[in-house]
Amino acid sequence: MRHARHIVLVGPMGAGKSHLGRLLALRMERPFVDVDAAIEAAAGCTINALFDSEGEAGFRTREARVLGDLLAAAPAVIATGGGAVLAEANRAAMRAAGTVVYLAVQPAVQLARLSGDDTRPLLRDADAGARLAALQASREPLYREVADLVFDTSSLSPEAAADALAARLATREDLPA
Image (cartoon, rainbow, N blue to C red):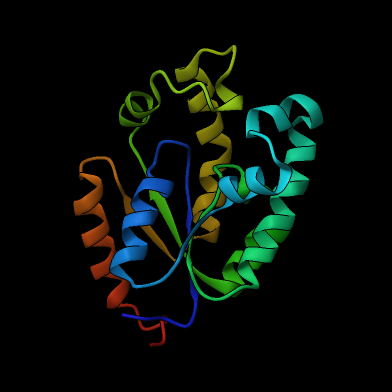
């Protein structure tokens, strides 16, 4: 199955954007691109190092630039970072370039998935549960605003979620072949 538009995955950290995205791309026969990985490759350092050296504002500037470049490229499944929706320009660009899927996840599942993950700068030196709840409270309306489709990843294995999401996307009329 091939579509002329991007499939853009948004949602909180731990929702499965990267893992599910790779599997979905295989099923949809298109490339997969992870915005955070592209930022790290371009910067030559980790997201944590960018947060340390440039702060969140510097990181968000890089994120917007990389996201814009990826959205201008050939159709792919694109996994965004959890905060990519914070900028209105990012939300508008995502909506214009593709079908946006909000990968939702239950808080307990999200916390379990992120347990022991030290690569998340917004969780460093914080009560992870409280921080995740605060991020979700502020970002949830933005995820829903930009989304063409909401898909809950909480109770499915990544493989089952990729199968189910590919099937749902295959029935959408806004995805021309």
